[in-house]
Length: 312
Image (tube, rainbow, N blue to C red; front, side, top):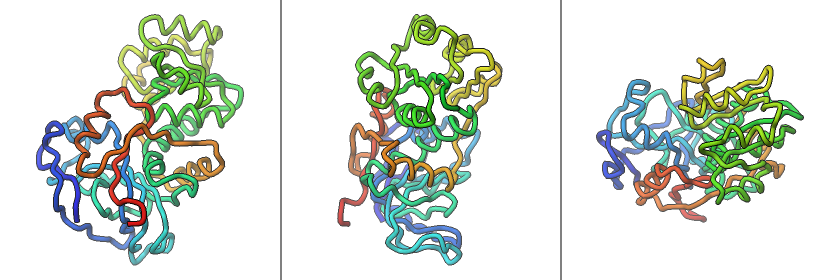
């Protein structure tokens, strides 16, 4: 099958397009014909070796954890899916080797859920990792409730765009940091935009004089101190970017595959409570360009790689 792979850590130039090994399908796995795969910052961080202390890399590595596609064959012990089912998945294993930037992927059943009927394959591909991250932080870590005020950093990004919508659906007031060019975009998601950068604390205080009930950090570093100073009494903070959040009394979160959570995201999308903005799509052979664009860090919504065209 055709796919993207790399044989050593490095920049986007180490990515190669060509023939890669066909996946073996275990008894609790599902063979999926990939229609689209979203790009996430973790993809280039893995490729550049930043996660080497956490995840073994079995070269050659096929990158990618997000997928939308069609079931070709379920494993012998998988009654949950049948051939022809449309699915989405956050296909993360405990090592790097068998990813989603290829024509087929053997996905553990615990990583999959039904694809939202009202989303295209490109939109659906952008939902699993970013959506699960937003959902698990807001619902499980921060336990955001109706009437609370939530500060979401990088509200126009892939995770931030979904976090704003989910927090708003939970009944929270959402303040989202973004560049001025993305203010209308954040408003369209249901958030109140505030410009990031120097003076952020004062600007947030102007909108929430009593402080915010919860902070969803996606940046880390100095942003943690600024955010901690914005918390109301009994306020909570969680970060997906910096374990140092623990030093401020917060919680560090790393997204987990979870079929139940992913199914809930599918339901929210079908209810119209959640949409997945796609900034740009690239064909599979241009995955390196897609990762370059993602690494620039100014993404509005998701960047997606298309693998099989409609009708394939």
